[in-house]
Length: 191
Image (tube, rainbow, N blue to C red; front, side):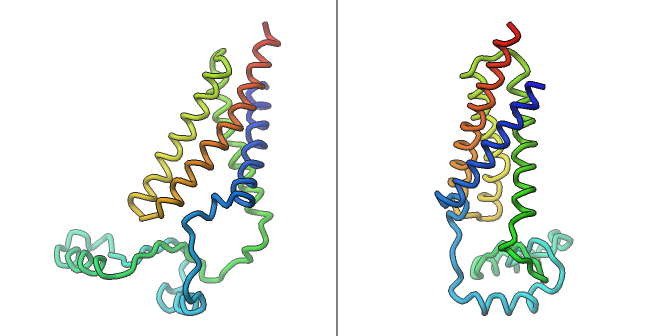
């Protein structure tokens, strides 16, 4: 039960931190730019990408043709002189101002993450400092395993990637401190 409560506390702290990080500090939009002519880009998406939702990388190459040296050479040459884009495409659009479903999913994600972290933090009678170190290590691990590959392979901007580190590390230190406090409090109650 103490791990469950710690996870709920951590999920709430992380959710609140996420709101502050995005809405007050702007960490979630670091590296994002406004297009020079949005209407031109939007009007060309259906023609260029079709009607199937998904992630598109431009320029692109058919993975089934990667063994064809002529195809890969042509792709290499084209990629040297073409703009690059990583596009999350929804051909039918969505009301991006209706955030209820996204907020619910974010809270669930934060809480499930905090529950997993609380489980690890509660495995032994660690002190506050060690539990906080576990939270920091988990934040850095998640950033290294998720965001750095996006920077490396998909060319996400460095400022976007570093802002994600700040968001995760600060958030999990705050949530980790609250969870470590609760778990330590529970340890003392048992003694």
